[in-house]
Amino acid sequence: MTREKRPRPQLDDKILVSWNGLMISAFAQGAQALDDPACLQAAQKAARFIHARLYDPGRNRLYHRWRAGERKVPGIADDYAFLIQGLLDLYEASFRTEWLEWAVQLTEAQNELFYDPRAGGFFTTSSGHDKRLLVRMKGSSDNAEPAASSVAALNLLRLSSFTGRKDFREKAEKTLTLFGSRMRDQPSSLPRMLVALDYALGMPRRIVIAGDPEAPATRAMLREVRARFLPGSVVMLLGQERDRATLQGWLPFLKGAVPLKGRTAAYVCVGYACGLPTGDLETFKSILDGSPALNEGKK
Image (cartoon, rainbow, N blue to C red; front, side, top):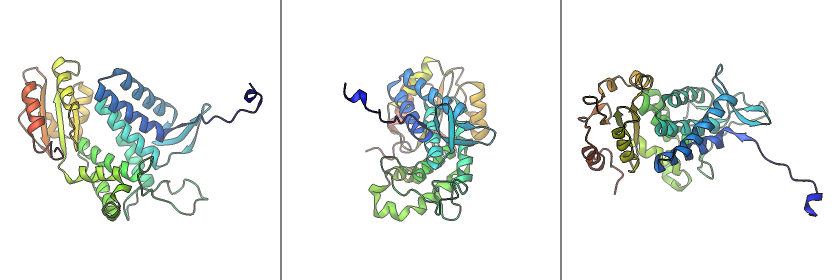
């Protein structure tokens, strides 16, 4: 009762794009692991809020925070990198290519604003963020939050697998090179970047499922993929016409990935070469469990 008579402490109720990007990743990954529609809905709701309130589509720019009906402060590298990561995870949870398309747009803005073309890596702020800043810093450690360069490097590699864009992979590799000595000498300081390094050392690996997203066979195949730890792989669903057209536009070789006699089919591709498709669930499980390309990190 006595405490109620004193002034209440101020409430920190701002909404940050960066933190919400991390949250979107968590919910999207939870939706995949638990097959929980509520997690997927939460991730999609947050992403749509950011798109509606904290994104300027005309300029292709993010704002940093939202509070009391106001968006303010230009987005920093963390906002872009963490949200792009969330959108990639959200695609693999929902298979709606609108999230991938937005991730590509934001990546182009991120590269323009923060990427260091001379040395690699990503500055925390853009060159015009605040004239009072004397030095543009680059985060160099994955602490309570990972460094923007670490997250961006992995995002670029994943997006290169989704889109076939070599420029994305080149920027990721240059970033990994910049932090190479630190990863060697102090690996515990950059665990997220080590994940990106592991991804970069392997061939692009794509698990492609062609079929009706709601078909029991499609859902069964997705459950088998999600039940396994398959580092360095991306999962794509060629289902709805619009989503299929987007992915095949980026990766023309996917035009040959079609259902088998109207039934859902799975293709496992390493680089730009795909193995024979299968519509049999047991065969697909044996491919996932037995393929050296998909299980390089499996002990």
